[in-house]
Every structure is written in structure tokens, then in C-alpha cells.
Length: 109
Image 1 (cartoon, rainbow, N blue to C red):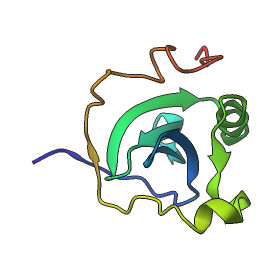
Image 2 (cartoon, helix red, strand yellow):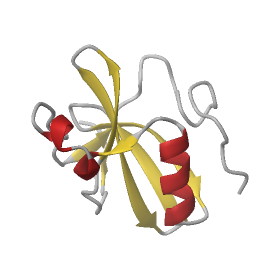
Image 3 (cartoon, rainbow, N blue to C red):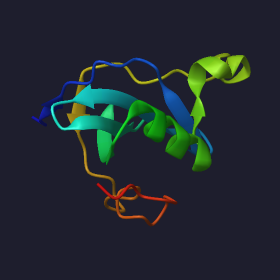
Image 4 (cartoon, helix red, strand yellow):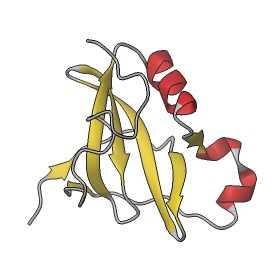
């Protein structure tokens, strides 16, 4: 059994990464401040990045090509965000966002 991760937000952001595969992001206020959780299509949390504020998290998501799902009605016609429960699931390529490999402008906290 994998560790369940509580994420309150359902304001999904998304990026199509391959045919029939998306990475999703949820911005959540946590005990540590604000965290962007990156979730795969099956609800597995594959990475996370802390930010100083929700505004900083939103700006960074946009700068990295991740779109807010509610702002794209066309995407909603053919994509479905993952449902909770969310669980820790390692990505086959490791921490793809927080490592900086596929992320521009990591926050310096």
C-alpha cells in the first residue's frame, strides 16, 4: 500500500506530456506554506515543489507551460483529472520537476 497524500485543492492545472498522458498539478496550502503537487493520470503524486505564495506557484506553472484546466473548455471535453485518493508514486525518471530537469525557475526558499 502506498502512502496517501492529502491534497485539498481541486483546481487542476495540466500539461499534455505524451499521447494519452498528462501531468496534473494542484496548488495546496500546507503546513510548510504553499506546495504544488504534480500528479499523474492515476492519482499518483510524482513530485512537488514548495513556493512562497499561491501567486508565485501560479506564475511558475504558467511559465512552464502548465495550464489551468478550468480555463480550457476544449481540454475538458476530452480530459478527466485524476480523483483522490492521491498516493505517493515515484516517477520512472525520478523527480522530474523539482530536480530542475523539466522546470524553469525553481524557487529559492
